[in-house]
Image (tube, rainbow, N blue to C red; front, side, top):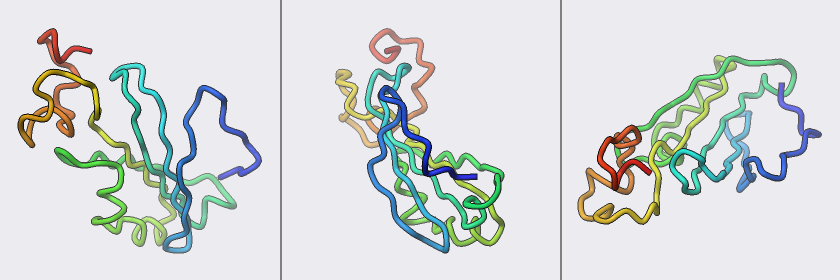
Length: 126
């Protein structure tokens, strides 16, 4: 159940935006990631049922180069989730702005390409 009286911890996620959709609502947050050492974002869809009872959660990991907003803007997942009483967590799966040499040289590697999160090459490890 969503409790709007609960405050966000000082060092926790920061609420960036909140908007209504499909009878429920979205909340978008940012936080400083310890693993990527960059700011990261995630968006959560709360179905209408979440205001009165706990609901199950699905984590939607978008594809290569996608952000947390791709699911919201292109997937329209909120309509089916609202019907089923399902919360959806949509994280940005890729660090952005890490400042690693070559991170923006290609669309399929570097910024927006989250598959290097467990890299073994020194420049990609951090």
